[in-house]
Image 1 (spheres, helix red, strand yellow):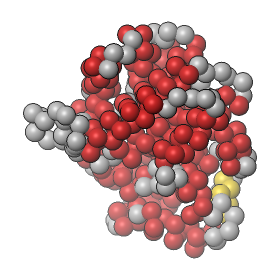
Image 2 (cartoon, rainbow, N blue to C red):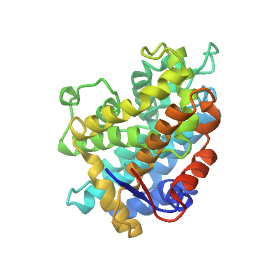
Image 3 (spheres, helix red, strand yellow):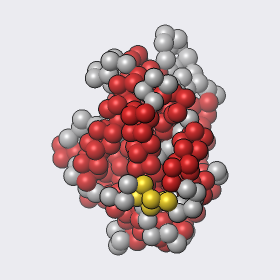
Image 4 (cartoon, rainbow, N blue to C red):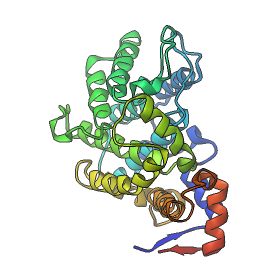
Length: 311
């Protein structure tokens, strides 16, 4: 499939605006013009504190891949998908919008270590982070008197982020809960792979997998080699298990920016295209070529700076 993309710098700014939370608010207001942001603003501030090490009882985030940037990317894709779904006639209650956003903000809180936990990094929880995220969320909700039904709504959403989880085995409260969970599972995958520094962060992901004893990777370069196949697996999971929520992104960009294309998926395709180039041409010095600036330089050299085509 041919991939057409804009000037790379402009494309990048649309995929990940510099001021993220204001963009999130603008998108939510397109879905619900009278939306009350007080609850999600408080949760967002607490999650920023949690990752930055100023939340009571917790250490600063110690994982280089599953960091605050990833959580914010997931949040952004979450509201974009909700907006695209709304354009396609899927209604959302204000409660569902709120809880969907809260779930996105908390979905990787399980990587954060407590003050007493001084061994290694949060990566050691790689295989347990969803359960730990749910535990953190449960305590957070209890301290702030969230209804128990709200916790179970978000719990089901977080379960959708597990790559080996059978979505049809999750207990959802409603169809709205199921759609929101599938949107979160989609946002989590696309958010990380469309991140502007995704390729630069892959060595950090390997270190997390190594500490967390995630099987399947002999070394860092093997993770790079297997990433294109992971994208193929991801596309299948997005389409089948997660209800093809990705299709809503195109309508979001059409309405929000006047661009009738899914720029998020395009960003991932650019990363995979360039990663294949690195694997084939620079296996011995691949780290140098993972840098975003190097990617832009080579793609411009190969394809030109005005609307280009990648085969």
